[in-house]
Every structure is written in C-alpha cells, then in structure tokens.
Length: 320
Image (spheres, rainbow, N blue to C red):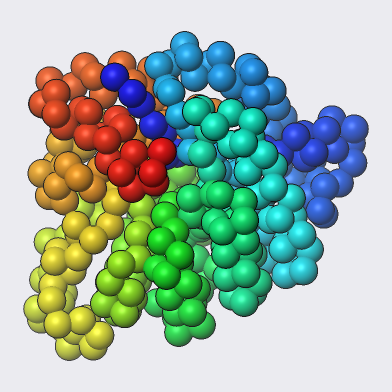
C-alpha cells in the first residue's frame, strides 16, 4: 500500500551548514533555533532521510521547511529572500527524487504582495504544491481584510495550504510548564484559526480554497457544538455567515496527528474520510513513533478508510 505524508519538515542544507559553522543564515542564529541542536534528524542528508522513510513505510514526504523559517516578525525583504532559498531547496529535492518528495513553500506573509508573488513562483515555476503557514501573522488572524488577496490567489492557483504553528501559542502567556504550549496550545490555536476562516467569511468568499488544519484540526471538531451554539444566540457570530460553523467542517482538510484512535475516528465521522490525510510531524518528538503501522493497526478504521487516508486522498489532491 502506498503512503504519502503531508506533514514532514526539513531544514535547508545551507542553513544547516551555516549553523554548524557558527554563522547566521538570513539573520537566523543558532541560539534562536535550539531544537535543531537537539534533534540530529534535522541535519540528515536526503539519503539518510530516505532510509528512515523506508524503515517507517513512508513512500512520499510532502516537504515543508520548518516553521522556524516563517520569520513574520522580521524585515519583509530579508524574509522574502530566505523564503526563496528555502523554496528553491525543497524544489530541487523534488526534482532529484521525484518519486519520493513533493513540496510546500514558506512565504513572507507580513508582506501580502510578496507572499502572493512567492506562492505563484513556487507553484508555477518550482512545481511545489502549496504552502505551509502559521495560525496568524504577528497576532493578526486570517479573517483580517488585508489577507483576502492572498486567499484569492491561493484559491486561483489551487494551492494546498497547511496550517502549522510556530513558537509561542495561545497558551504561552499563561503557562510555559509541562510542554503545554505545544500539547494544548497547538490544538487551541488551530480552533481559533478555523473560527477565523469561518466566522470571518473567508470560506464563503473563497469557496475553492484548500486549507488543511494540522494536528487533526486541534480542538475544532470537539468544540464545534459550542461554536454552533454561539452562532445561534449571538448576533456578532452571524455577522458574516448565514450557516452554522459546523456546515463548514467538511470544507477543510485534517491530518491524522491526533495520538488517539478515538479522536481520529471522531474526526473522520464528523468531516468525512475524504477530508482526512496522513501526517507524521517528522522529525520531531511529538510525531508517532511508527505512524504507518499505527494507522494500519487501528481496528475502528476499514481497509478502504486506511487507503484513503494513507495515500488516495493526497494522490488526488496533489496529483502525486
């Protein structure tokens, strides 16, 4: 059975070389990215990565440069130059190993015209499939009018947009203990992002927009009843939409990184198996140890559901 992983990260070789030499790379210092120093797999060569993919049973990784490269709070010109280098690197890997790698771009979202131009270049010239972006840009959520030209461009290009956090999350101001900014914050951020797209009318304005909420959509599916209740009883929740938020659940895609069979089953039942795609979060410690084996061993999923999730859905969506 074929397997395609939508959620697999990579660091550009030039960045790794600079870090090993103690040099900056587009303004990024080694001190700013401690997780690279503590995770040897981020420095692996393509051959080492492919060998690990083989051991895990992963046929194709859709590569996304690590979220540390978003740099939305930095100078837009410098971030654009860094994004171009990242995207060129990922594109070259897809050309060198066309049967094993596809790619997503990183973008300078603090400058919408620059982000649109880089998304167009990444898809049309570089052959990438879309982009990975954060949950917000310097605290501004994606329902803000300034982002609409980007969503229109992504829709027109058929870009697949993977939402993935970086750095502090909504939990971080309250607690940095127990890894909660990741284990709870990521999931809460994803629900806020879903709500911003829906309540803000973005999904109505861009009906063909393709958004994937990583980590199983976070708390989105589990909190949808309360969102619907808010829409029914509060006029401000109905300002831009005429349907309850639950009507939009199957407009999004969700990866399988739930770490719970019951949670994944719930997501599938709520949004439909055609909206669920395989993801691993390679190479970080929050990934499943044996992700393909985990999916194949889930007793609550039918064989057809496993095939749809592991490869059929992404094969059709991304043409790989």
